Length: 186
Image (tube, rainbow, N blue to C red; front, side, top):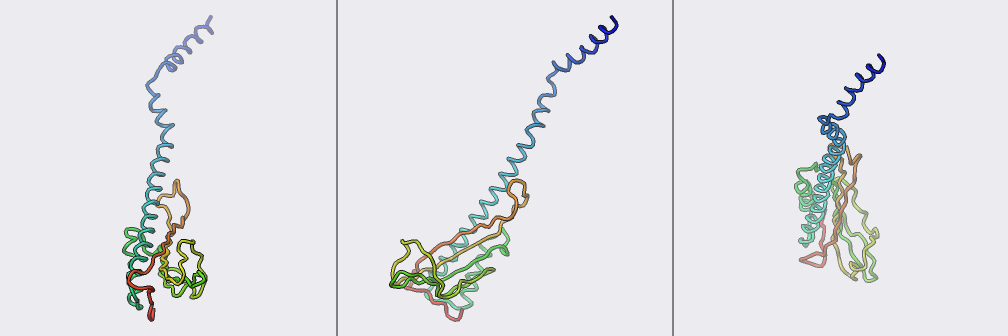
């Protein structure tokens, strides 16, 4: 009999606890918090990576456009154009961007070769090296300006995207004011 009373007494608080719904919201929040934090931080990291990738594209387009508007360049002109990449990539670190601008000539046999190449924070392409082009760009006896950019992006938080991502872009442009763009004493 005594045992039955003890068991009944122990069941009452247990029943009250099972019927009590006051802590459900806190438990649900605690279960969803890691997912919400992951979604938030992931959104921040992905949107930041997209913004940097957009800057990489703008750098390639800007440098290609500046060079293709010239008839000839000297060392100062080329240095100024390459340094413009630092301004375009702001507010992101200009020391992490690599830029290469090259003139590619397509001969009568539609073979593309580098004539000159200049770089900032990277490696210039060797003169006379072969370039693989899409068939649409292989117009015999023409010249192209090839602007390439590359950025080593490391996320600030590193929660969802980890490690360094290399973001790249390139563009080919035809010279606008002449058939070729000379690089004199570059």
